Image (cartoon, rainbow, N blue to C red; front, side, top):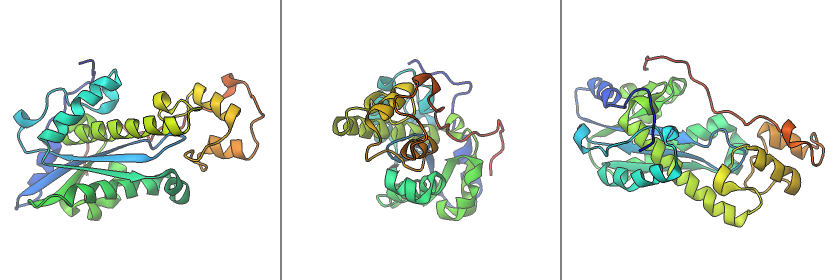
Length: 250
C-alpha cells in the first residue's frame, strides 16, 4: 500500500466516547468528502467497528493519504464486511445551492448517521466526528458521549474507514455523471476546480450538477469572466475547511 500518514489510527477516540457512558455504546465514525468541489454532491460515510483492532482491515487510513483510487477501492469491501454498521448520507448540488455548503454538510452527516442506525438493533449509537467545529451537532449525533476531534480521520479507525467509504462512493457517482456530462472530466477531477475543469467551463458553460452558489461558478454565470479567459488566471480551487493542529476533543 502507498498510503502515508504521520500517525496510524487507533480506537482511542471510540474508547473516549464509550468511557462517557456507564451503558454499552456503539460508536460510529463519520467523515465527508466533496465539500469544496465545484460540482456534484457532498457524500458522508458512517462506519462502526467492534472494539477490537484485530477485526479491522489492515491498511485502513484517511482516504486522502492513498496514492491511488485503486488502493481505496480495494479496501471498500473489506471495510463493509468487517463493520457492524455502515451508512451513507448525500446532499445534492441543488440542496447545496439552497442551503449553503455548511448546512448541506451537516444534513449529509445526519443522513449518514440515520442511514447507519436504521439497519442496527444493538446498543445506543453515538458518533465520533472529524471536526471540533461540528460539536453544535452533538444532540443529533448521540448526545454527551459523542466525540468531535480535528483530524479524527487520521486518529480514528472508524472515521478513517468512513472517509474511504465516502470517497469511493462519491468517486463512483462522479464517474457515472461523467458519462452524462462528458465535457468536464468528472471521472478524473471528480468535480473539483482543476485547470482542465475550468477550461471546460469556459468552453461549454455550466451543467446541471455544478453548484451555482460556489463563487467561481456564480461569477462565471454573472459574466465576470471573459470567454476563453486565460487558463493561467483560473480561480483557485475552493479549499475544504482548515482545522488547527490540535489533539483536543470535544
